[in-house]
Length: 348
Length: 87
Image (cartoon, rainbow over all chains, first blue to last red; front, top):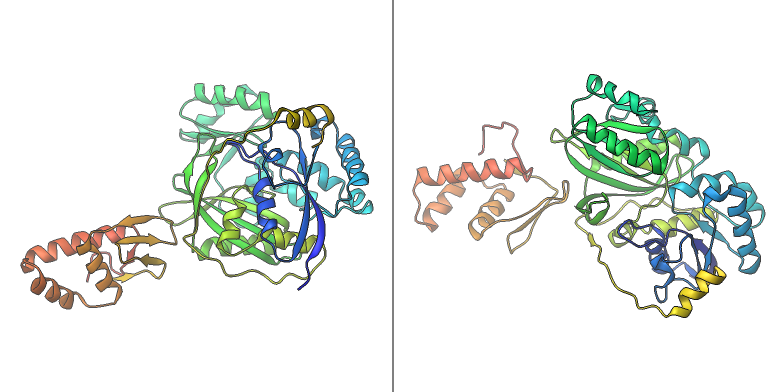
């Protein structure tokens, strides 16, 4: 089989203790035998470790935060595209997804393909709409309350037993054992991510996740369940192991069939001691632990690229259970010139 | 009692439950016992094997066996239709 030459742009190269999926996505695609890829790293910050990892990206460009304005972001992408034509763009941050979804047609018209969920799919799984989502798609979800102001904190004791989870719309989750702790978390989260702040019932159990890929027609192209074995104080998986859990796969394929989900997703679930599964949230993108799925036998980024190219992709059904990933930190020595180039010119 | 199909048992005594992600270490005697259970050998035959091989009487074996089975049941390594029947 001949290898197809492609240029793929990837965001999320922040391989820190709160890792983005960019580096593992690139590693996964480098494992692909179907493509010969030139990688363009798109970065927001000058200290994203993926910028400096040897042999990872062929070219790095700095892009403006979506908060600076969607047009500014897309204009910059098109400017980069004129210099280094991009075939496929894989965005990996929740906060930037909306901008790329909204401009899917504009990007396609200039020759940049994406494979993202629709805006409707993206919005209906918002954390503050999870109870309605659970009801619509017949999934158990923890009870929740959206707080628009601090005055509502007193309502929590009527609805929940402490502890409760206090969550931001995009990121961050803290456990709170009393109203004072809720107040502290509320202030921390609302100043960073805005309102509403979500109060979620605490469901006791084991945290399990599924990485999956839907073709947009209701078919599950790939799905691998995993249990986090080591969780950092930021709540991120630093170690995990693939599971042979048919129920998790069933939940995933039912959800993809009903929603006709397009693109990658991560289901975050809690499995109780009674064997019930509660959906905590859906991340509408490839998660940072994607390379575990590749190691277990399903190269999800490769399948996503094929779908973006409009190729037929047969569902990947087999994977190995008991495959583990363990993250580690590593010091890269960087010459000042490299840092200077990205800081001064916005490219490397 | 049945060892569930998701259980992987290594010759070193490492037991991995691929459904839950839990793993356990069992000692050589535990490994021998769990392997016999996995082969669907009935309780009386297992008892006979252990009494002949080790310095243990009927009552002590039954007590240890039931304790072991309760533990593997608790950790979802094995299933029983009747929770009181460990045979």
